[in-house]
Image (cartoon, rainbow, N blue to C red):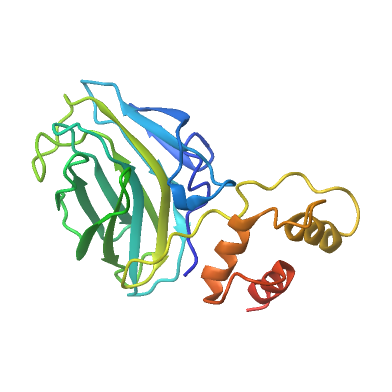
Length: 247
């Protein structure tokens, strides 16, 4: 399943992510171990205001006016803080919204102010949780987004409040049109350099297939394309690209 979110690992990109009464410290922590060498590092998002609710909110992405289910997810770094409860949401413009909040110490989750149809937490490894929720479109909304409040609540499952301050380490937002949680799909163009002049196909294949040592230089793109297509990531990456473009 394709990930609708762009710059999913680059939370300081103001063209995609809007910070309100919050700050982001880019590349503050390592990405989850599974992500590979080409992954973007994790970012710290902080609510430093005791007078307003801090948030990071993604841009809206275009979708069909359907009644399909959509899954939003994000990786949240584990810590020992038991008195700060990040609140994650998936929202359709002019349509439904769902919230789920998390205890980053224990992994306990609770419904937010507007419960999602389904929510869950994956104990990913010793360092990361993967928090997710499912919300169905209402048949008329044509845009969807995700966002998170680092410290929105007065308790897990509690009421919203402005006085709380705190930070959380985030990585890898996803939105997929699906009814169940899907494998994480990175932004495939995170690590792309500028291509040289000339035939784009030649330049693209030269970049993504091999470097001087004959090794795959963009396993992240390979994995993203293969996941989207539901096929093996092995083999010639230009073949995967052709399949993806021609579907």
